[in-house]
Amino acid sequence: MVPFMLMCAITAVPGGVIYSGAEMVTAAEMIEALQGVDIVFIGEKHDDSFAHEWELFIWEALASDNRALALEMFETDVQPLLNEYLAGEVSENVFLEGARPWGNYQTDYAPMVEFARENGFSVIAANVPRMYAAMVARGGFSAVLAEPGFEDISVDSSNILYKEVFLATMEAIGDQMHGMPVAPENLYRAQLLKDAVMARSISGEKVVFVCGSFHSDFHSGIPDQISSDSYLTVTVLGEGEEFSPDLADFVIFRQDQ
Image (cartoon, rainbow, N blue to C red; front, side):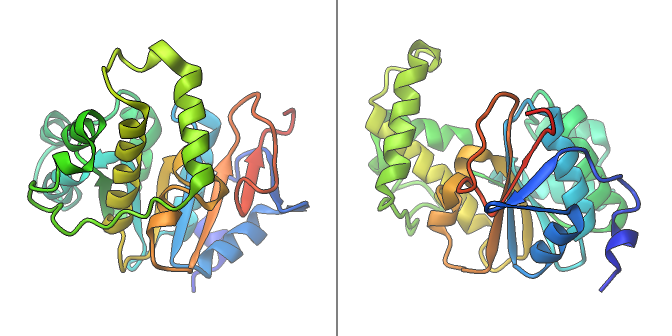
């Protein structure tokens, strides 16, 4: 195994404080624990630069020939194009034109992808194509059952707390839901579909999985949909968010938070 300090030489340890339960731990202690599991979830607020610093640091520390980077930020249907870009077969412009990157891709996620590309590591486009999530949001799971790749999709909907928190969040944001004429229950089903597809995308893989914190906080979301027990979760608190030791196995926040 490559020594920890050597693995982390590219990016310095970001600032902040790390807690595991009620105990403060060092970055080295956290990385040592994360190395011992197959799946590492890192939950973020998508516009939080502090979270992106930690994601890059953790990915550089854990990346290897048998551990991929998995991203919520790319959808499964762009995997062939992503593979071509990683292999140097298409230019960055061609990749970006066809991969539907998020608006903050270049500043926040490209550094992780470029690290993978430069070192020959894999990247998994994990999320469900948005058209299918929209179909479920409008018509429930039955809307996609006849679509290729969804005939045998397995969705665990047994986490009642996850559902309650999701529906409460949707109610709180109200008219910010892009004006979609959809029932809250179907929005929740679309959320479960995303979780299930992202779980299926990493089946049998060792990964560092970067996702929105709602998809992994409290070991809910994607963790509900995976069969492996070999995982740990990390969450990076957004500015102003309250600390709870139950959010994740490792909770990182700013020192002044």
